[in-house]
Image 1 (cartoon, rainbow, N blue to C red):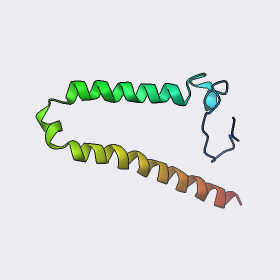
Image 2: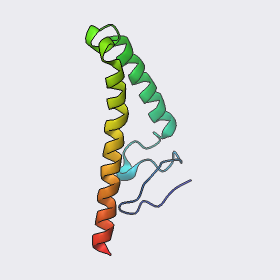
Image 3: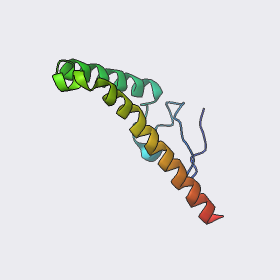
Length: 88
């Protein structure tokens, strides 16, 4: 399944033959991204799990990992909407 890749629109690569915009990661779709995410978080947990500062502030680290990317998505969506409003 492919989606329109128009400027300012959301794009999700559900078809591995599409790749990502600009040709990056051809064949690296949702499954590959998920595997990379799980692997990196597991390795980070192994490496940093016994650090006292991380143990004391784990809740804040998790909230930061959720809120910061979420905020970036909201800012990007807002900018795209403002850009579309200017063009119209």
